[in-house]
Image (cartoon, rainbow, N blue to C red):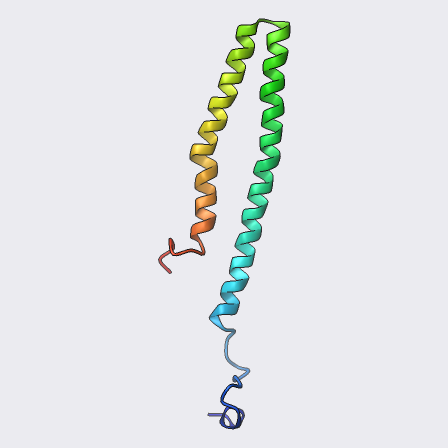
Length: 105
């Protein structure tokens, strides 16, 4: 036991590694920033998707036939629903499970 800890039981030996809490806080901050970046990218992609899907359906309905516009809109909704149900939710789940009780470590 060093003389520093003998005088002050709260003082830490400077050769020790950082606390687990400090390392966990750093990891959580990085993962939360990653989750924020994924969600911001998804929000921008959602805006672009809405413009293309609704605008494309409107343009096709006015210039070709109403049926083409309806098929475009339904197709855009189906593709977006599939992407949300499979890929995006899974990606967010992976980011969340890295720091929650989902992970075994």
